[in-house]
Image (cartoon, rainbow, N blue to C red; front, side, top):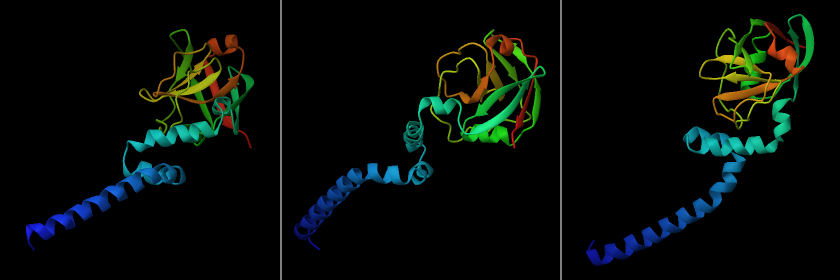
Length: 182
């Protein structure tokens, strides 16, 4: 093949390649919505894009207290509580029943260590914790019960659910028992 016949073939191939690339780029948005697990499995960059899609599917309020009712007893007093449907909350539920001794942390929350670390895979968008929130601080592997509103949202702090108790009850809590309801 001579240079004069090779050049038109390369130009045609390059043009077809550019058109395919453009068509693929236009179609990626719709395929990512249809198959987010494929996109997140192929590289780590698309994973954050799929997380907001799932977070936007449910309102922020439901992230704090949705499907899973639990029985919580704080220093012998039973209070209403729920876990959200996040993977970390489901992982916590797999450990129930739990009885944990609590200690103060920065005058904002009571903390305790579960028997093992919880999963942080597919964590929902970070939320700033509110008084009554049950949360998991991933770097330390501890549970936190907020009796005051917490700091701003952090990817390290996963809100798992909400405990419906007065701030006074939560702030002085020494022991918590968390059980699954039947």
